Image (cartoon, rainbow, N blue to C red; front, side, top):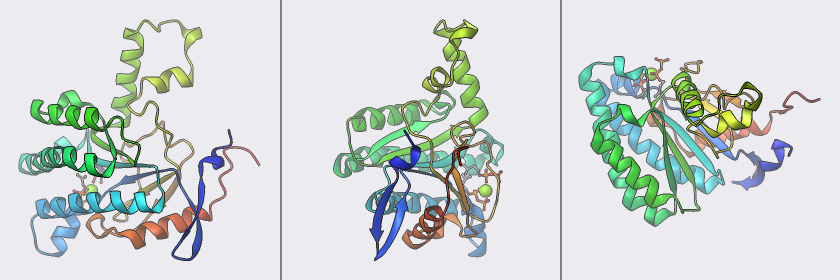
Length: 245
Ligand code: IPE
Ligand code: IPE
Ligand code: MG
């Protein structure tokens, strides 16, 4: 199927836009947002978490079906212990609150990343939300925690081999994808990074083979409906060719 067929034309505030099916965001700039306000970095993370919640509603209302956010990378453990602890505390609270929220808003929550590296209680609350929301048919919200794309691919290969797929002739993109954390999800159509950085930082390397990129100087806690529409507007103007003409 031509991947464009997934995309949807929608009229948003009087403007016809091509809404991507899957938007993935490298949310960045929480620390700088707090610093600008002479506040501790963790305050920025708190605001950032609120923005995540708000943006789930915004993207759902815009007609986006899959929304993925990069919340904690396999490299983020290098941060000071106090910051790692604060981020884990926010994630823990987020998962617990999600249980109730997803029941109301029909959202399906998934977590990608190496969950075994997280504390047991967080693993348990992730499993609870994933199970409870598995049948929900609204927004597919995916949160990347202890996620690194290289780590994901190595874990996928290990699982594939452990399942007995050792014959080289059997290998295919489809088989490999089946073992990725994102199995069953469409690739991101649009990848956004906030805060002015223009790098991928080990996010969805396999999955973004044909994604469109959008970089914005806006710091994540300031992200909102208008800045999201700006990104979709830019996306609407792109000519996706997937190697064709
Ligand atoms: C993004 O904000 C959140 C995480 C990576 C957890 P940062 O914490 O990276 O904010 P900056 O880049 O220092 O401003
Ligand atoms: C990328 O942000 C990871 C997440 C958004 C979770 P970072 O702020 O950690 O990335 P670098 O270190 O600037 O590349
Ligand atoms: Mg950063």
